[in-house]
Length: 290
Image (cartoon, rainbow, N blue to C red; front, side):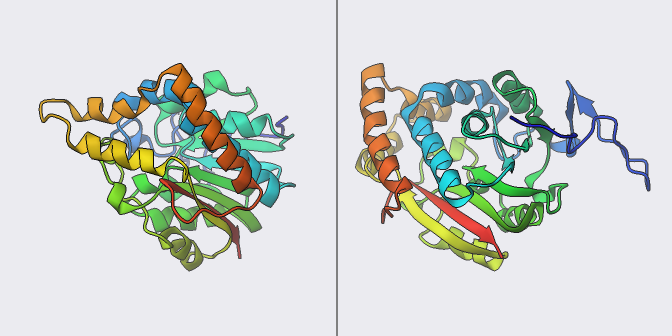
């Protein structure tokens, strides 16, 4: 499935200055000062979110959408990098979708990468890295950042570094939360810097050397339910911890989870066939390096 020498060999050191990245549990740390800090995401949520990604309808639908769009817009891509891969649920889906020459997952948090390593094929390379300082140039033909850019104040810097990591005409798929009016406790607990306005992500991509191939809202069919849920969350009693309020969105019984999953699976199928939705809780954009 994946082969070739490592992008970042564990014994590598710079011939000019002698720098060698520290290694933690077999994972190179290229930004060790930020490892497992609350920069962009709180480590207290790692295990909870890693479990939710396995079963929750929203994550399942997003995985299917990403795999489908990669098939349409980057059908021949063999080298994939995911920025902010977390516990690896998207990489696992993409890894099983085709044969790859190389898959690399990066995250600022090595604890997340250890969770990912338990889920992913052994040949998937994992690297702790700051998305604002990616150590790759012209190395990949497909890149992804799935609900990552909203965590970083310097989102355009991240976009520019992803562009650097791609070959000419390489493809970048990004998903982000949208509509500032939907801002809620979940965004605060998730350390979001923003929810994107209509056209904001596309404009930032164009400004940093990309052209837009596809752009649409998604989770459109569940937007009314999401809006109601956010209003109710704002009215929660003041004594309830913010993290408890934020996690209420994941309190979905098996039957309801299956029903909502079915609704989103229909929407996802239509989106993969080119339907563009005017509104939705999130946005997905496919861009190509100019």
